[in-house]
Structure formats: C-alpha cells, structure tokens
Amino acid sequence: MDTIYLKNYVVVAKHGYYKEEHAKAQRFVVSVSASCNVKVAGESDDLKETLNYEFIRKSVHDILMQSPHDLIESLAEEIAAAVLTHSKVSSVEVDISKPDVWNDCVPGVLIVRKK
Image 1: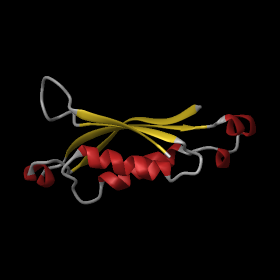
Image 2 (image 1 turned 180 degrees about the horizontal axis):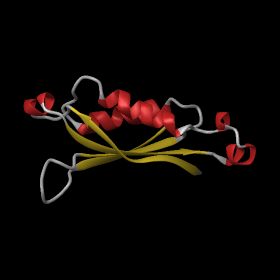
Image 3 (image 1 turned 120 degrees about the vertical axis):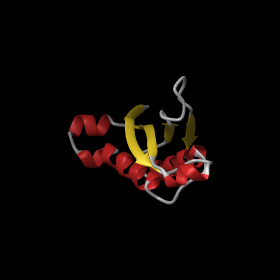
C-alpha cells in the first residue's frame, strides 16, 4: 500500500485539559499518513485518481479551529475519522504533539485507525 502524508503541520489553537489552555493559544504539530493506492494516479497524472493532500490539511485545520478539546487524543480521533471518509483511504496514522508544554521533552499522541 502507498502513503499520502502531511508532515509537521503547525497550527496555533486552543486545546488542552487545563482551562488556561482554552484561553491562550499554543502550537500543535500534526502529521498525518494515509494509506491509499496511488498507482493509477502515478500512471495517469490525474489528481482525481488519488488523495489530494490538501484534503488532509483542510481536515486538520478545520478540526483544530473548532471549539476546544480537553485531550489531543480526541483531536486525533476526529482527524482520523475525517481522513477515513475519503474513498481512496484504507487506514490513517495521526500524530499530534504540543511542543511548547515543557522545555525538556515534547508530549503527544500517535494513533492508527483502519476502515
């Protein structure tokens, strides 16, 4: 299976368990990898035959710009569900991190979901 991906998309949004995180925006770094067959698109050079990575980017952006979530796990689940709606996608991996929480490490979550 082939993969279409979006790596290290930085979105400034208001999500987090602590209420101050709902008031003050912070950076989220999101990477999404979607399994799909790109052979036909590669041979035809036709965008309709593949997953346009703009679809992934818009899905991530729209979800992160919604009302605050307490957990990045729920953001990851919502992003995965959105990407899996595309007919060409058979599975998806969503990685979300919050790079500004601590100085000595970066917390995050990585999930894998299939249709």
